[in-house]
Image 1: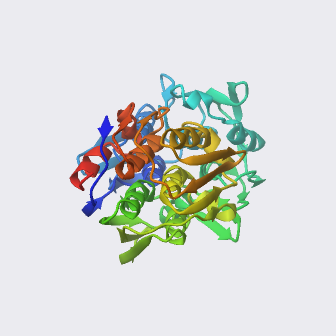
Image 2: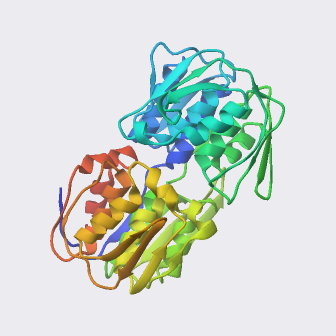
Length: 423
């Protein structure tokens, strides 16, 4: 795919539903008593993998054009799958299913694509084994993973990293454990699991960095409206900020405080981003308007990193257009995503002539010089693909994106939307 430099981007748009919330809505809807209607569901490949896994465990799930209907089987109603559960490219599906499967009375095997088979699972295996789970994995760290029938007990577990996937896997196993399960976070991570638990009637208490769950007798189905994914909105917030003359309004975006680090950082860089039509539903939601602005470099690290870990690739693009130096640190987690996103972004920004330096836990970007168009690799990573497409809009000369179809993992219509806005 070839992308030419863009004139001003203008218009209103909605982005696909939040990926994290879509996954959890299907999982908890499947474990609830009753019917769950999910609107705004992300019809991306990762979330469809979650649906496929639960269908293989006997859950009836109907996918319509504008909603997903899950006929819950209850906490103890899943059936043993006849074949391995294939999670595709989805780390969320894989890790959260580990928590659910740890407490089942049957054996199940999880496996995914080549990328998933390289992503570390040991951090999930360790606490689940402490809870009594019986799990086998390749080299005790990688898929395929096989989980055997086990009796679980609650534990108190201090997370080694701020990870919503790890936290959620433990809390989901806690649904099947004897006694309380407590997780202590080193820094706040996205709290969609906790919010959805409360909506379904689970007793879960959050006090500071400590989350405690009492196992419920059952879950009660509720309808779930999935807001627009701020991770997808981040690409348009950045594009609107860096392309001169642009003004974009993104409607119905989830602005959960554990996810809004990208807005905070872009504003710190000088971006003009305003919020309108705020409402607090099951998740806080608003409309965001971004206008082109002169950006400057900032330092990004510490407690804000878990609040923007998925958005760091496109923040690096914003930094390439910002005057001065941007330092990203404490972001080791980027190395174990769909690709090593630190190495990938450093390599691709370098192709565009950006002065960028890789560090052990992040990168240093010295911006202010307009990047040049280039031929960019995606590494099979949807966020790398979309980030380099955003850079291409503001670059000098034509750019080429290899394997653009990879965006279907989280945003199937991304390039169509860009074109409609003037890109």
